[in-house]
Image (tube, rainbow, N blue to C red):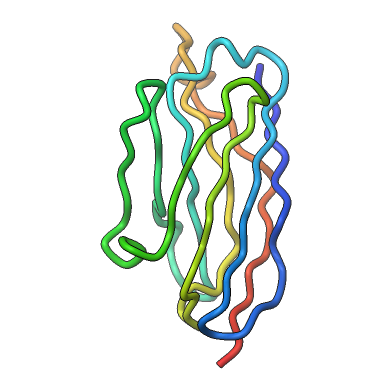
Amino acid sequence: QVQLVESGGGLVQAGGSLRLSCAASGSTFTIAAMGWYRQGPGSQRELVANINNSGVTNYADSVKGRFTISRDNAKNTLYLQMNLLKPEDTAVYCCHAFLLASIPEQRHAWGQGTQVTVSS
């Protein structure tokens, strides 16, 4: 199993920046890809960005050009640099890992989430 712990959320004014971190532990060799999801008030959970083991990244249209996802494999840590934040970016941000596992129910690991609040 893989455990994920996020940090770096907080309150920031519109136009500001935050960097989220997600530290992975446990069977990290089973991680095939990692990503960030968010769920705002009254909204469904949505993918923000993800990155696979080859470094290929994918972003939601709403964050392209403002957010950057990266991984430090030596530290087993995932990052999300968020710039030019907008009030609509306010959400709980969760780290996700897609795992190589034969049992479908064991292919996903989630962090507990970190709150990001952007004031106008």
